[in-house]
Image (cartoon, rainbow, N blue to C red):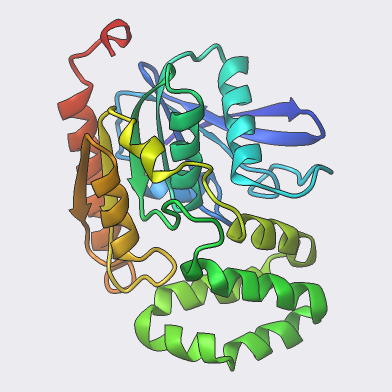
Length: 278
């Protein structure tokens, strides 16, 4: 995919906005610690949409800025500011993990603009600091209190890591990777703040979101439990839920299935609708 990268100054941070394609707008966000390349793994090739990803503060080519604490609401505000800068009014909001939380927040705070939702492996439902994100908070604490190599070794021997080796090896690999980031000590604040946050959306709020929604979950994923995806789909009145192959078991099959289902959803729900009637 050919991406046009546009620097965007937002308050105290420099954000990288990836923009490609033409047509109706799809604002699709990456997960915690991810970037635009993670989004590219799940979006279909040749998508007849204008796809935009704003790399969140501290992710990809975007700077951390000086505002604290980090939050889902902060990242969502950056995304909507980038959309405003580009003159985008209505859009589908989507994302992976943290990106799904941002999309849900946008649907609640800008209901007149969000015409659909795509939630891939959501990690949050309606509670702050969910238990499934406790390993990320554990890593944030180690990054703040130990040298990188020492903290990584400590976590690798922890009870949490032992459990994940059995239940979700893909999660464990991603978590250990946080220690290898060149900006790991500074990124600890992002990890700790976001994993302690919530979407700002209640179950009642979700019940009022009547827009078409696609929710995808998989097994062997402790950070993104299948039950969270199912619960989220049940709470949204016009949601379609699908279990895709586990990323931990077969990453290629997982990404292929996600791309196929997203394309089917967009073609089924939106291909023949104009923005005016959505």
